[in-house]
Image (cartoon, rainbow, N blue to C red; front, top):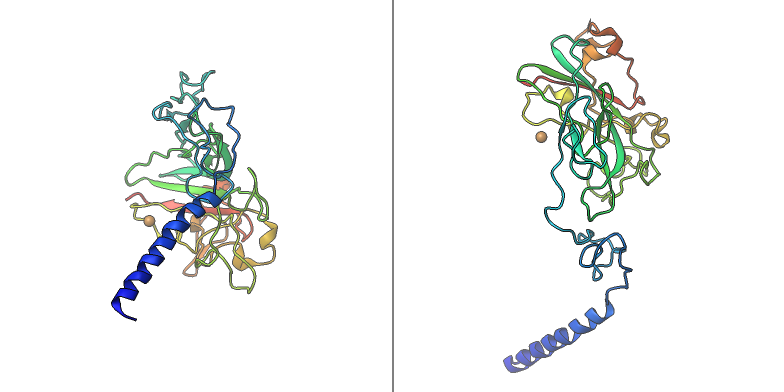
Length: 291
Ligand SMILES: [Cu+2]
């Protein structure tokens, strides 16, 4: 092929590409989306976005700076009605960050919290409908509300924080507000997200784990990728121990009954707070040194 022919061929290909472009556009004419009555014109669902397709432009158009940041609400605070002037320092949508209340008597020298994980909905902006979220709340305090980003735990240097953590997500195979399957697509080809040790049996999408950065945390409480737990009684993992708790999951020895470390029985301090662990209890205990 001589140079001139090659040049011509390139021009033809270019022309074809340019011709093809408008045709592709015509084939993907934005679908008719009914205006959302919740929102004034210019706000709300964008008519040129097809919200039925998986993409990363799912949010409607929203206004800037219309909602206040949620403040921190101390134990015993109240949200006003309408929201915005209560003692929880909540914003106009009623959101605030609950200050977790430490139990300082069950494990002397430690701040002890019982924390639950649930799926819930929250309106994150005045121009958005409620968003489905997963998050934490305190079970042993006075405020068990589900607030994004969950309770605030004020820790002090050299005072350990202990958790009894409950995975209370819904059962596998269910979706919706109380569902256990993730509401986002899961790429099961990523290591740890798909098949477990049993061929054809997948790890569940309601596993959870807690991880703290920068606290000189012992490895058993470090929330590594193999230390997840599943909710109590999830039918998808019945009779399959490898799928109930991660392979390197460990409880804090003195927070459970019957723990033996290096051949010595570990005394269970704070008697009432100790429990008899099982692979299906949906519970994990954590110790953060905060050193
Ligand atoms: Cu980290």
